[in-house]
Image (tube, rainbow, N blue to C red; front, side, top):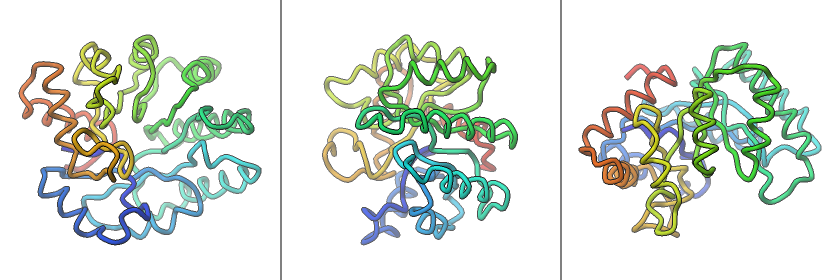
Length: 254
């Protein structure tokens, strides 16, 4: 299995990071993809160099503030002179849940990073919260009808899912699909397995029965099993197809 979105460099793992990594490998998670957040978190991310770990470069929408131009310059430098062989630009996107103070700047930052994705021929990992309509309007304004990437931790409705799939995106499904009142099972049921990616978003959003605890990549099989149950597929098939999906999208040499 491939965890297409986890923050192993987060301080939540400072006390036992090697053990967390080993538990993931023991659970059958062959690779973990780590999205970037901002300039401040980059040193911790870049310091992790194990062969099973893959890196992204990008600016998270909640890190867009008054200094967004400086932060964008940092991303640009990473793309020009990569510290790692970055597999995507991410996580990038729009987050209008907590605060709309920098909504216009978030749109500008996202547009620039989407342009870089085109320039460098890279997929994107999109964080979208309370902003799906704004996202799809921006994509329409940019004039491209096909994109490579994933809507990470997908939280939209069935209409949003359909729009995303028409544009070429995959849906990133994590622990929320196991929650009792989640709307995700209905969306997963209707989404072709070839367009689904597994993720944890660790240390956030742990699946049942670990809900409310620190999440980690070793819990990914719980997500895969829930998808298998929803789609009435063998777990091994969910594993194989979602792994192939991630390997193809992100160009992983697995």
